[in-house]
Image 1 (cartoon, rainbow over the protein chains, first blue to last red):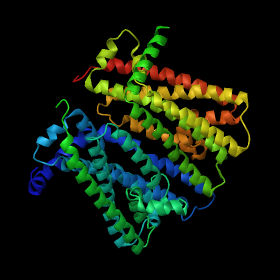
Image 2 (image 1 turned 120 degrees about the vertical axis):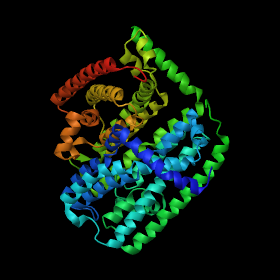
Image 3 (image 1 turned 90 degrees about the vertical axis):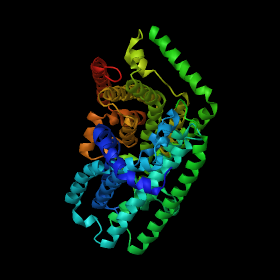
Image 4 (image 1 turned 30 degrees about the horizontal axis):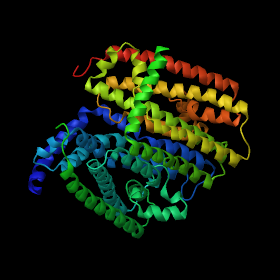
Length: 268
Length: 261
């Protein structure tokens, strides 16, 4: 693998290729977007539940803001690198990537990043509808919290990416890594705030959720955007999120290095 | 008769394939049981803050989750494995070999792959029903169980038709690795009684994507509160969906031009 300099030089091109790829496979993006409309279903459900009065700090407008924000955050921080890695490891086509002078993980990351403009296009109308529907009340007015929100969004994306990478690297070792990814997704759906805002969990579960990575994949950016936390608490949570980013980075690099040694490029 | 024998053969092949990887077989069975948890947790959270959801109590809502788990077994055990196989065939162009075989192509792709360990879901579903009836403090009558079984046949037919329509889409949109994810995502909403949704969504889930037919009606049947007219409508709807799926499938097959085409 060539050094950082080469990667940096190649990065704009990788992004351009990735963007063209995203444009070429618009239909796939549409399918994926439709597959991630779960927050809108939960929005419908929770607003019905909240019809007879607020639950915790959530009335109907808060639920609407929460789940529309959830939809947007998922659009912007989603990653599917695992499926590509898994496929390329099993079919042996990863060998082709290894020949290129750019680290494969950087290439996957670039592909993910490059699809963002198209995803932004999908999220923009939702954001507009959200603002029109609930007005500006439901989002935070603290400029500092918006800065923290941006940081947390980056953190969410990185955690999701590293999870994809780490489980993807496990494809080097075990055959059923797909099942493992599915299991991760199940935990992710339940504990990340994707289906249920985490502050509606019983206290014991919440304490656990605070330390698990899932909540930092979706919940934290959404909470920051909707002004659920004061600055001090937001900073604490952000610290924990970036702790998980660091853990993800460490796990990924260890697994990648030891996994690559086992890679035999079947059929390649 | 020929088709029954063919089905048995396809089943046997899948069974042998599954038994080849015994460790996976056990692991997958275990993971399946464990997956009941995320189906129950949101429900438990809702009923922690509210005694009832719409006109459903906790015990009644558990019936819906039970049928949801059951159908998930059908989905993961019969439908999705075949879906993955067909989409792969279409992408690689090897569907030609399926089409050349002297049997109905829709039948062949529908029975291409089974995942036998998904039977676990049936037992999990029964467990959830028992739990639900314990919460309700009563049991179902034999007649209710019979009606529920009929409603379930309609549900499986609807689910299957929806699946054939999804596969047909794969002929038009080539790179669809995540088609099964879309299917799962839509189906996920079926774990809630359809009456808890606002009107527009409820209509959508009754007539466009018939989730109501899949889990809410069988649950109502089991509780003995499903009107006969609704059951008749559900059966009619299932037959209609089946016919539409058949027509669309034939149209898509006619359009298929093999790989690189």
